[in-house]
Image (cartoon, rainbow, N blue to C red):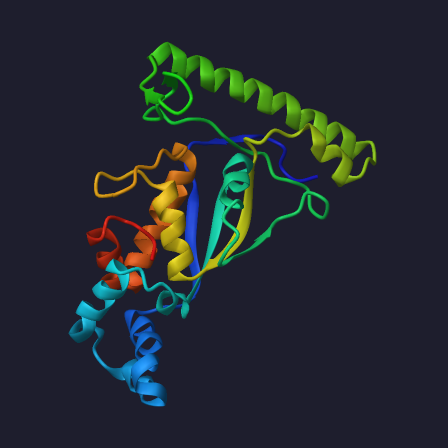
Length: 241
């Protein structure tokens, strides 16, 4: 058995592990409609000279030129984040670690002190506000106790020779998992439009904070790869083309 002492984490990790993505990918894909095979020349040109075209495509929602690129992220986050994440199916590919084939590690999510804890209002019109220090203390203590108990039950079954795929049933959705997630810029923009909250967004979104933490890290990595495309996305109200 590996180390069975639980670790309690209040953050997620996102690593860009592989990519083929640049602003010039948008340009040659778009210009094939008028230049045919000569559009391949855009690969070696400075995309800064054509940022107006990128903005036009974003503004008028000509979306397919934003699909000819690829980014693969390694994400470590609580299982409940992945269950929301995998609602995004178009333009995404996923491979997640399996509790059938490996012993799951005791990494569990607890809210950090800045995490808003209290929901006010009715469904569709609610907001989250800061909790008190006492509420945060209760949340962390209750979670840690429950996590410890569930992982001890998991270990007990494994030690008794019960299959991993059966024993994992006692583990909560606050357990951390890891996955590779591969997307293109268009599918990422759609994800960001729903999973981030921004005053610049034309259409408001109300994401759960934990998946927003993943989205923020993905956006930062993408902005570094495709700065002109990212700027056009923001300037046009964070609406996916």
